Image (cartoon, rainbow, N blue to C red):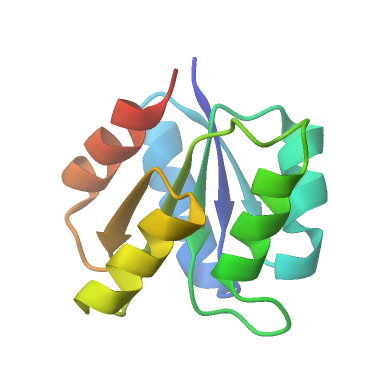
Length: 120
């Protein structure tokens, strides 16, 4: 069973996604504190991270940078997602080391498939 860590500062969104992934057969953990996300990646031993871009304190790009710079988590697949739908944000996510970028509002089946595609 694959395990996903969902990082989103909106607890309701995080919980909805967690439940959807669990129903789809995944083990899922939520973190709503972007500053604690890197430690959660280490502690959860997850197969993938679903990471929101827009968060207070440390945005998703800061979290991604911390994940990629830590030898223990550097290879963890990260899919970023956001309400931002512009090409600049997509390319910035890819350049920062995200494995994929999915706009919020994408149907869950497609989101799950995109996350599953980056799990190794």
